[in-house]
Length: 158
Image (cartoon, rainbow, N blue to C red; front, top):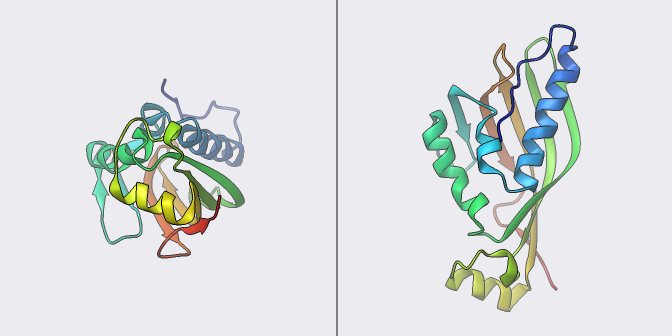
């Protein structure tokens, strides 16, 4: 599935940006990597907040594969706040990322670290963060800049 982000002629810029962000976040929550990638421009860059810079769809896809493959279990995002600057085609969202490391969500991948985390803290973790988005005229993402509020996820016993 792909997303044609180009707004219709009568779509208001704010509504079009809102819909683009909604669909992009939803692509993570339904684990659809192809859909997530359809939002990026060819010259996009992704900075996940760890010092790395991923440029272009191939590098961004490679950075996202572990999230979508089940390597970290089931990854979902709850959005709490959103700011949109329609004139500059910029947006920011504040979110909570939830990881469910239960065996049924790990897609058969084995990890000593994941096993150790489950043994110590249980199967669920979360952390909070913010994404800043830049968009081109077609409302494709040209920049995704992630900032996390914690260096490590908060462990949720259970």
